[in-house]
Length: 319
Ligand code: NAP
Image (cartoon, rainbow, N blue to C red; front, side):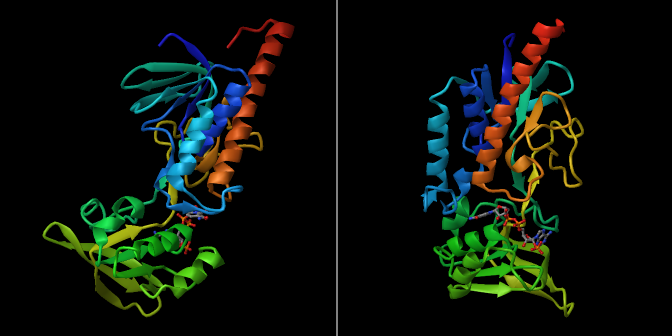
């Protein structure tokens, strides 16, 4: 594609849509490019109850509101784009996908994060055959069955509670004896008699029979005891890793790969910004992603204004 955008936002989740809205309102030629459809992670969330102004809202509904809102502005959307290569280092940045090559003066990285893997034997083999990273998508398959959720954060405990709608028994296995989830979430789970917590325990192997998960082998870290628990499903909820595959090493990242930014969401590369779950941040929530996106979109507009100003004052070559 010959057209050069002022700003291309990679990722159409809450951070990307918010960045798009702020960039387009700043009157710069803006596009959002996503490997899938727009909406991002909240599409898979059940109910969100900590997005200000919406005491309870389903994830898909909030995502739809975000997209409808962004649609009111002049944003070009490229969806289902399989990225092959990204060049963030040149003055004009390029994104090569299977369909086309896209060019932009600024890029906002809003590619989010994906569920981390346990990295144990059987996990990959039984993914889709009893191992699932999405209770909302797969929960209904576990009617009157037993499932094991791994993790102790908000996601593990909330998704574990959701699974009790279908499953007759939900184990939540956590590697320590104290949950990381918010206290209010913990209290609700402790009251749910379908849930049994297995503390101080790590999963060792997912075992199957007839091409389906049948057991999980685990070890108590305190006693060293190894045992097998019969289960129909395993839902790992052990956090997220950043989606940086196509630009790893082109911007400064932390030891886990999250993109480092300053308070203006600027990365180490001029004209490249990052927002939402992909960046190093103490809190990964829809509300923080949306706020990041606003700052990143605003910063991209400011950056282009400054470049224009320099061109006028100093006659430097236009990027
Ligand atoms: P998280 O808060 O990082 O929790 C991950 C959990 O997995 C921790 O309990 C961790 O144990 C455990 N863990 C990590 N690696 C493990 C491994 N290799 N084996 C076994 N256990 C492992 O992740 P999250 O629950 O996915 O949440 C991510 C972010 O989204 C958080 O900021 C969370 O608050 C937010 N979130 C919010 C809501 C909500 O507010 N409604 C819902 C979902 C998620 P340790 O505790 O020992 O580290």
